[in-house]
Image (tube, rainbow, N blue to C red):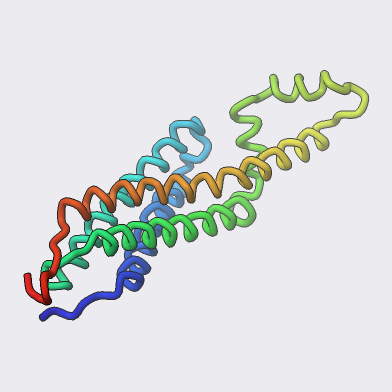
Length: 185
């Protein structure tokens, strides 16, 4: 009998690896100067990489777990693997993003805001109160807006990751499940 792997330990190992792949793609964008390209294209590419690596990791980990358990797999185990993996991956990516926007690229908010909205956003902001608004107040306003956006974006990212993992692990678990009957296959 092969040694049975712990659901949490295998999900932790692969969750960190999955997050590492997503973070590596983000760092490559930064190293090669692609963060200054069109925001939506970069964001979409990073999101697709994240989703694909999560789905592939869940599938591989469930398969590895089943193999280590003499070919047996319960649906509950498959779902636990998917949930743990998604939560671990998401938390690591969120921590990286917080480090990214505060340490690696602290001017990200301003660059992002000017890059998407440009002068039109500044003109609209200035038109509200021409005497009281300066570029400095605009930059503060932009940064506060993005802080609010990230406060909603991170929980949403976690929820979407969990939903993707539930769907993926349910499908993979249903396909791969094999029950043990009275201790036998």
